[in-house]
Amino acid sequence: MYILSNGRKTVLYTGMTNSLETRIWQHKTKAIAGFTKRYNCDRLVYFETFQDVKQAIAREKQIK
Figure 1 (spheres, rainbow, N blue to C red):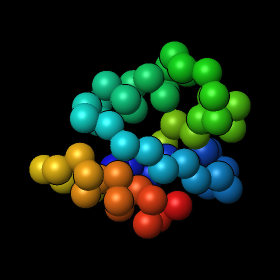
Figure 2: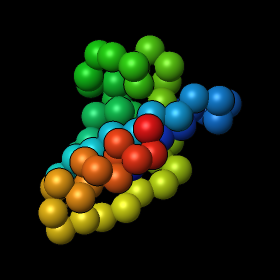
Figure 3: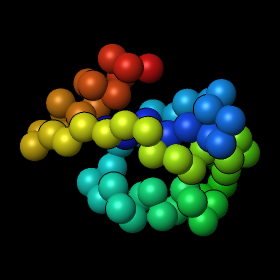
Figure 4: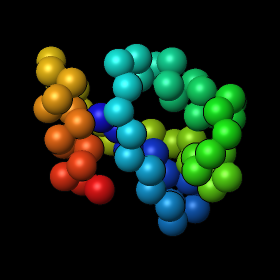
């Protein structure tokens, strides 16, 4: 589970992935269209790791 921000630190995006390094690269290179590309969210500001995907999903929902 991770949280991204934009350069102005005015927008936050919460996501989940099994490969944080790859996913952050995708956000930074704007490889995937959507919210983070539109609002230039490419700065990792926080992350947590989980052994169980269900726990990660629950935590993401809790934060949202």
